[in-house]
Amino acid sequence: MSASERIYRGQARVESIAPDDRGFRYGDGLFETMRGHRGSVPWWPAHWRRLSAGASRLQLPLPPEALVLGEIAALLDGGDGVVRLQLTRGGGGRGYAPPAAAEPAWVLSRHESPPPPPERGLGLRWCTTRLAAQPLLAGLKHCNRLEQVLARLELRGGGDDEGLLLGEEGEVVSAISANLFILRGGRWWTPPVDRCGVAGVCRGWLLEQGLAGERRLDREAVEQAEAVVLTNAVRGILPVSGLGTRRWSPHPRTGALRAALAAAHPAFADS
Amino acid sequence: MSASERIYRGQARVESIAPDDRGFRYGDGLFETMRGHRGSVPWWPAHWRRLSAGASRLQLPLPPEALVLGEIAALLDGGDGVVRLQLTRGGGGRGYAPPAAAEPAWVLSRHESPPPPPERGLGLRWCTTRLAAQPLLAGLKHCNRLEQVLARLELRGGGDDEGLLLGEEGEVVSAISANLFILRGGRWWTPPVDRCGVAGVCRGWLLEQGLAGERRLDREAVEQAEAVVLTNAVRGILPVSGLGTRRWSPHPRTGALRAALAAAHPAFADS
Image (cartoon, rainbow over all chains, first blue to last red; front, side):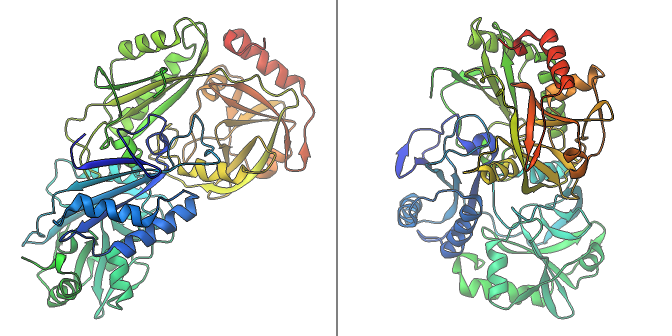
């Protein structure tokens, strides 16, 4: 275990993950991947809100917010980086039935800040892996991620930076580890995440700011877009330069969107 | 960690599960829950076959079969019990992309033998949680089990022993932790598991023996069945006595099916 990982059960720090942890056994948990900047997490309220909503939907216990926040501050120690928080239902015997009184397990880890988005923009491809529709889990950043693992395996050996995923009816959902926005008719649009996909924190910020709207999108809509970006809470807004054979030149509206984010959250300002 | 749990990375025994284990982070793994009898696992070839098929589909590395089998024998030490084997892709940084050279992590644990099926038969209910259709994962006993956890939560506080699950088109799939067979027109039938559900080892045995067939089933077919049983590799064939308000009396064909299994595998003979 590296020095930058901290494991907890309930409110106490522990040495290791229990072999009967339900996160390990069933993916019975949630996670958040957060951008840390100068010792804190600018989007913390949104991350905690999503984690709490997920815990409520899965009937998972939560550790106290103040405790988690204090431990994150200690881990960042005034610096920058990426903080990953994973929460599971804790230990729980054999079988799917959760114990009546579950004590949550959680792990914090700190990772290097990501490099700035490539100047050239990201190259994408369509994945053949499709996301199953499960409204009970849609939107959550839960730990059942085999679909994303399979999709990521499709990129192996190719030159693409990311893959775009369709739902089972052929609707566009998102990239593998980012949300998708397209510029069309002068406005940014992103697909809803009510059947599958993750309600990304950067995505949520763009919607709350009125900088984008939600709309079902098909492949043609994406391919005919005036500009395309991917978003996530760690890397911010990432310009897309290609999707299969389709190419996009840098677009002023993409620059404006990135500037709005950088103004709100200096962590996302280009150096 | 209890004395009956053993954790491995690659071919070596280790002390604990790594916090970056991809099973813990993404449910990126598979498991088998097996009935041990007098020091061995009667259905081992079927369990290993399913695990290998799953590993192939997920591009997961496998430890050597002989090593795993030897460790299971040591764990059972000539006795009876339930053996759980979990296999994950091992450690792998942050992000969905699997490392190019993954070293598998695996955990063996031993648990008490289950009690014999209740004399009265099992009481079931229909769950409202539906299984999403994902042909890429269907049939596998993978570690993305949040749907089963949610379904199990539905049973909390009620008197039912198990819940039946529908797929998203209303087709019957299985129970939460068992497969379903119904007797209709003089023959046992079980739903296919090509869109969701697990290809259970006891289910596979019944099909291979020609004792049952595969067929899509709807709710009405189950409710109108002459007899119903659940099956899994740990508990064998479990008679069902009720589903909501529907009641079934003990059926001679259920007894005959259970006797066939007991003859093949004495672990499943009633004491």
